[in-house]
Image: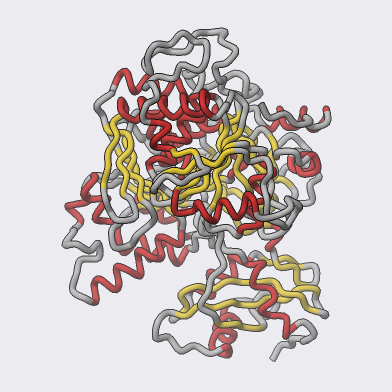
Amino acid sequence: MITYAPPDELTQQNILQARSKDGIPPTHHRVPFRNLRDVLALHAKVSPHKPYLIAYDENGERSELTYGDFVARAHQIANLLYEDLGVRRGDRVAVFGHNHRDVVLIYMACWIVGAAIAPQNATEDDTRIAFILRNSEARVLFVLDAYLERALHIVRGGAGGDGELGAPNIETLVQVGGTPREGFVSFYDAVKSRPRTFLGDESGAKGADVALRDGNADAPTLEDEALLVYTSGTTGAPKGVVLSQYNLLVDAQSISQWHAFTGNQRSMCVLPIHHVNGIVVTLITPLLVGASTVLNHRFSVQHFWERVAREKVHLVSVVPTLLQFLLDHADALERSGETIYGHGINRTDLAHFRHFICGAGTLSVALARAFEARFGFKIVHGYGLSETTCYSCFLPITLAWETHQHWMQAHGYPSIGCPIDANDMAIFSADGSGQQLGAGERGEICVRGHNVMLAYYNRPDANRETFKFGWFRTGDEGFYLEDEQGRHFFFITGRIKELINRGGVKFSPFEIEEVLLSIPGVKVGLAVGFENDYYGEEVGAYIVLQEGATLSESDVLAHCRQVMSFEKSPKAVVFGTEIPVTTTGKYQRLKLRDLFSAYKSTQFKKG
C-alpha cells in the first residue's frame, strides 16, 4: 500500500471543491458500478461471446478476445499479481511496453486487484523513465521482451539520484513475451496455470460473473487509485497525476454519452496506451458500454482506412498530427491514381464510420478546413488534460454541417466545444486571483468536476497553486462565446507559458500560426517567443516546408506583415525539418527558442 502525506487543510478543501460538480462531491458517484471489476464482470456475464479487444501486432497479425476470454485471462493475471508477486490493493505496478493486447490485460488485472498502473513511455529518455519509476514507488515492473535489456539498464544502471539511472524500488521484473530468460519472471509461463477467476480477496466470488460482496475490505472501491501518469512538460521534473477508478469511469461515461457511443459500435485505438487518451477513449469507454475496440500497434497511414473499413469502426480518437499525415497520404495516393483511402476503398466502404474525435495537440483552422473538405467527415474537436482524466469538452455532434463549420472556422481558432456532463468549465483571470471572466474575455481555462484528478503525487507546491481557488487551473489561455441557446463554446488560444510577451504585450502563438499556415508551401509553421534584449521576447517563426517548396525568409516575413501588425509579425525565420512534439502530438515550442539565439541582441525596426 502506497502512503503519502496529504495536502494541507486549505488545499484539501480546494481540491474537494475542484472535484465537485453542481455542489455534489465526488463521493456521490454518478456511475452504476462499484469498481472496474464490476464492469468486467457484467460484460463477461451478459455478452461473453462479443469481441472486446481486436488487436493488430507490429507484423499486422490480427487477434481477437471476446469479453468472456478477456475477463478470464485478466483474472489469471490478477491471481499472478496477488499470489506470486505480492501485489495488493493500493500498490502500484509499472508497465514498460507499447500498444499490445497483453499490456491491456495487465492494466485490467491490476484494476481487478485494486492496484494502480504507472505506464512508461518507451520513447522517453532513460533518465526520465528512471525518475518516474522511482517516483511511482512501484515494486513490480512488467516489460515487453523488446524492452527488457533497456529496462534492466534503467533499473540497475545508476545510483538513483535525480537525473540518474536506477530504480531500487523495483524488486521484480516480469518478462512479457520472448524466450524466457533466467532471473526474470516469465509472464506466459506464470499465467497459464492460474485460475480463470480471481481468488485473492475475500469476496467469496466463484466466477468472473459474480459481483463483489459489500463490505469486503480487500475489494477496490471507485476512489482507489487506478493510474499514475506523468505530465509531459518541457521543463522541470514530471509531475505524477493520480487518477482513481471513478475518474476513469465517470469521464468514459460522459464521453460515451456525448458521442452516442453504444455497445453495438466499435472504436479504434491508434494513440499510445501509456497516455490517458489511448486508455480512456479507446479502452475504458468501449468497456464501459460493452462495445468493441480495435488496438493498433501504432498509427499507420497505409493501414488506417483499410482497418476502419474491414473492422467497421465507428469512431477514432486522433491528434492533429495524424490528420495531417492522412491528408498528405491522400495526396500521394491520388497522384498515383488510387482512391484517397488506398487499397481500392471508396466512401461506401466507410458508410459505418461516423466522425473523428480530435484533441491533445494544436488543431489549426487551416488543417481542420482542409481535412473536412477532403474527406467529408466531421472532426469533433475537444479538449482535456491528464489532470482532468481525459476530455473535458467537445463540439456537439448534433450540429448541422454549416453550424459545425462556423464553430471550427469563424473565430480564428477551432472551438473545443462545450463542457461534458462530468465537469464545469470557466475562464478566470490568468494572474491566479480567482476573478471569473465573461464571454469573449481571455484568461485561464479552469475545470471543476468529478473527472478532476485526486492530486499531483507528493507535490504539495503544485497542488497549492493548481487548486488555489477551488478549480483546477489548466495553464491554458482561452475564452468562450455563447450561442443562441446559451451554450458556452470554449476556445484555447495557447499555453500561458508559451504566450509571447513582447514588451508587455502578449500574443498567442496560435493566431500567428494560422497566418503562417496560410502561406503556400508551408507544411508546419510554429510561432516561437525568443529572448531579446530590447523587448524581453520577440516573435520568431519556425518553418517546415512542403516537399518541393522554395520559400525564403523574406517571403515569410512579407506575407505576415501584409496581414498582421509589425509587433505581432515574426521578426526572424528558421527553416527546419524536425518538429519537436510530445508523444500525444503537442508541439513543444519552448524547445525551439535556442534556434533564435543569434537574434538576442538584434533590434528589429519597421521598414
